[in-house]
Length: 390
Image 1: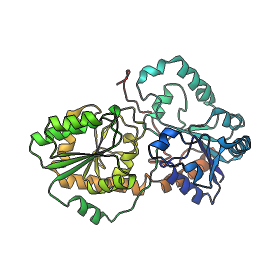
Image 2: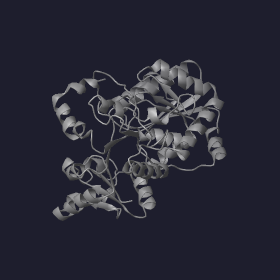
Image 3: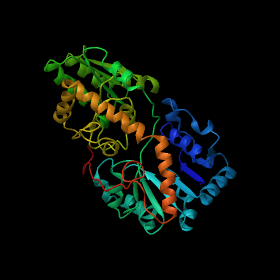
Image 4: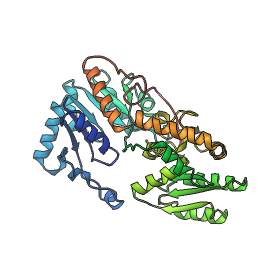
């Protein structure tokens, strides 16, 4: 099967899936990059992956490259389309060939944008108008299907998707022996220190744990606009013995911290389209306490089976679930092992690639998805978020 993946530029979250697709299609896979990696991303440490891999076609380099990219999209058996210009896709859609778009949720900043005239016009022109054509949606958020359904688009044509960072295999006995090394409960938060990721909620949890006399440590990895606020909170609440603001670290060192931690706090609100740190922490055997508004939570976390889910913005709810894990190390390990299994058995690049090809074959034959759960299964409408900017 000949597959083309078209998006703005190749990034580290997409690479493992692309490499799996290249292998499983016997080399009949291409990634079309429609724009160069932005300078601000490069300044943050992103690599220019567009130039590193021979399966990438850089459509922006010349008119010939653009025409080659459009021909690949036009003639492929199946196309995945992310942030690609509509004129790259129009001819394929008109020809009635299968196209699978992928998208995070539409209303990250609140459902008030459901009523924005420009957005309504754009959604109709690019999505709702194709409701009777073989154009489908890969949902990279548990809220994507619901958001598009509110616009009359992709009803009964949505499938669970996401981001598929590298999944590592561990010797679980050794991994959990590392996590048990020491008397303190080890908590971790990682991400950009910005308002909608709510790292300050993790500090508030630490304050309550300290007040109740628990022996623990909370490591916070990342940098951003809230750095000074968090430093002030730690200082003013006398939490220096318990909370360590580590700053930004390379991905491999973040993973090392995850592998040494028992509990991971994932506190983002509805502005978090997905949240790949959730994949990574679950793959590292952490017992996760995850916000119900973050895009990845609804697909990855089964409450009390492979993690815990709390009501976003409710620090009391967050604290009660973190406290439960701090008090019960056996529960934390059970959830951490189940989280690890979810990643190595289901939510990983290899399974995603295999299932994508199986789904594509089914759609080309006029059938529906063969999968009942996990990647490429039916994505049901799920609603969440606010009617205002949080």
